[in-house]
Length: 404
Image (cartoon, rainbow, N blue to C red; front, side, top):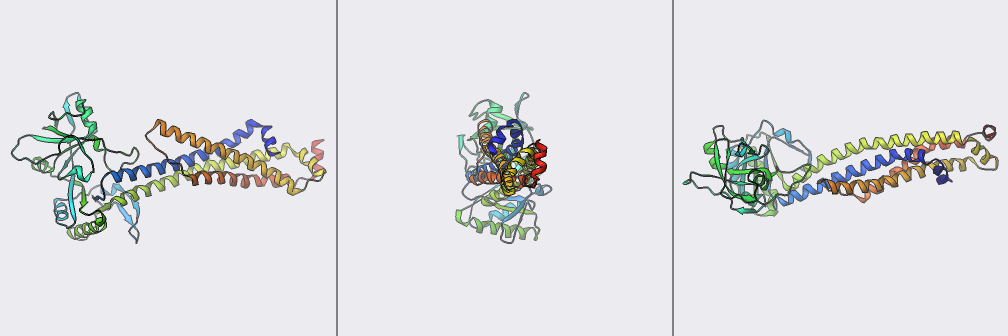
């Protein structure tokens, strides 16, 4: 009877369900995208090395009593930097295989007037960067300090090679950064990048130059924005991180103006942000489910008014208030459940097109799909109750008079 009633007014029924469909598509898609990004970030962090440790300027994270990150704010790094003293003290610690400082160098790489790359990052580094970034040099070799040579060398990302030189392996070719001429010594293989929230800069757009050479030629000094530490033993990452924390705290006289992050911390930090965003946006999207529920209630009130005569006839031949109540609640539930099913199917389609047309790879969780269906059921029960009660309480005599 409920299905027949909805079929009799297909257009109105679909418009009523539309709010539920939109709400479920929004919630399922948002949660799926958030889960996909978290897994992508975890994969990117795994690609950076076995258990690298990042030392960053500013107190960018807050932890609870157990050490779990509760909030992350990268903007806390503004106005802070790491120093040569910090770098030297870290290098003295035991259990460390490699220490690599990163310094941003101002300037735009250019081959000639019409061939330049404003989006590129020029980074001064020292040490075995391919090791700490867990990335191979596809063409050429890594930088080597050679004080006897007057030439300055650089290793570039794959995007820089294509955009500046329009070739994959421009080994031996030269370009300029400010007034310095650099010769390409190597080209990195393409880095794995997360499209929405990268854990690291896009090193495909990076130019790596010698840290020591840049220190000799720089007139403004060097502000280290990151130090990556590679422990000798992967399983001792926690111990090394604690040593770095204690050492820098001592060097800085107890000032809490730096951050030590392990690989797992990086995943926690970004996952926490994404979880908060997902919850906030899902709550906003959930408003559409509330609006859809109001729409169901409104349509059911209209249906009760239109079918007053039918209610009178059913009561006259023995239908009880409970039966009338059940009929109209069932109609509301069928309406919301159909909307829920269509919403789930539409969300699968939306996620498919996101994978097909964008770099985003959403991950649909079965529990989210089940929750969406249960939510649709709850909306039908909740908002269908008031009209159903009104129908059940109608006086049969007045209802029959209305019919006549």
